[in-house]
Length: 300
Image (cartoon, rainbow, N blue to C red; front, side):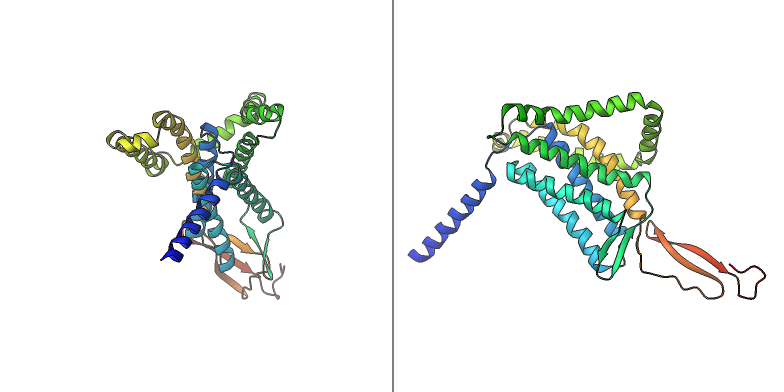
């Protein structure tokens, strides 16, 4: 009996020790953290939609993409639950690795076994995913810098100002290149999937937020555990709106983007044949190939 109690006490002590390590230099939640977490959840949804709607021919590639989506979702929930320095730097590394993976797959290709897999031809919608991953990684790094108690006041001030400088820099670029900015805004509005993105992503998320606020009114203990919930809701709603539109557009693109092995060769018989070269929304698209015979007057 005493041995069992000793083991239980030891496990409880180890759990408290691990939790205390993760809680070192805990950060106060704010707008920047919510934007970073929602961007991370959005990229996780985009990866998940791509795997489900357009599964790669390689099982290992599908497992890699699915595992990456799950890791992004878990780290986002962990950071918002316990915004400590260690979890923030892990989240920054995960999102940075996502950007690096995107660059590799769209340039050299991703080697899996003897085959190099490349994503479909780059389009404007393809940029939503790395942009969200890059922005969230940048925000996580800035938040991590705020938890460094040993850093000088100058460095902490710089890290606190950097997100605002990013927004100002974007606005300055848009003002100097207003024609290109107008084009990008038009593309964003046209690809945002309105009103479906609002009905299927934004409004359900806002509904969950409203339910949580209602439960907070009814349950006294919940009110004690969630101080400043109304302020948090006001901070989250604009982020939810923007991220839901980006996630919808990125998910739609992922559902229609295929992965191609560079080592694969298409063998077509003489004459005309029909091949499925990609799928759109789960439906194969046909491609007719025609090759003249060797006796033709002008062989290809």
